[in-house]
Image (cartoon, rainbow, N blue to C red; front, side, top):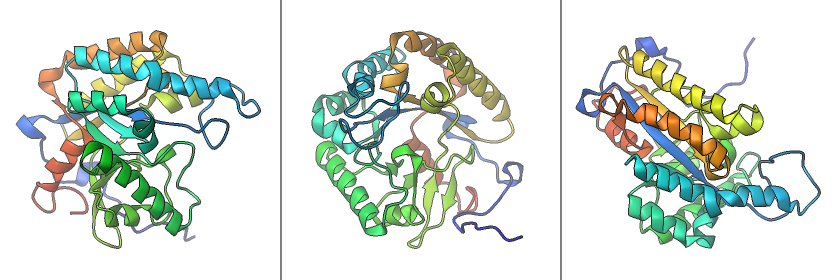
Length: 297
């Protein structure tokens, strides 16, 4: 039986790939990927803290708004204490409405990654012309605010159409985070040339873990620690990327921030054993490796 498939990349088992190391001979790259999202009031998409209510449903809007008003700033402060970099998958409207957020990102020297205009919409189901406009609008807005265009992209809700990768490459993007299918970067084919896929976790991600699957904050802490410890051990055999994905309106809640702090401390206790980095730095490193090292190159 022949099933529908794609031609974006080939199947290569992880134990049949060339070996390499990260800077300094490190074997495990670790990054903290934060999501900064802005939602429409009483319209469009949005995660729900409980059963949906009729519009304007101010309760769930306010729950998400807590992230930009409070939770995000607690994350900033905590990561400052650990002297840890972050990357930020950012809705462009979030910075348009709340420029103070970018001021803090700039002060920290963190990486800004394109994340659409708003998480009240998603790319899946869009016509190519509309999706192209979405990418262009987001890119232009972030470039105007930050002074440079983002190099990386993760779509709202991690959604794509059949031409998303093509449109991203044509808009000047160098890497994407939409495909949670690997623990190593690999090259992705587009109609205009290759674009790099950097690992991004769907599992070690506070939103699906605690909102969709109802794990507790303590369980999420154990998930983060177990993921890190196992990947650190596995990285003896091959270079790996361990991403940890956060949202201010979820882990920024104090009762969730406490166990997250414990998980991050555990990782920081191994700081000399890892490359603490960002997706953009991972992409740059991979782009400079010899041809044939990264799958698809």
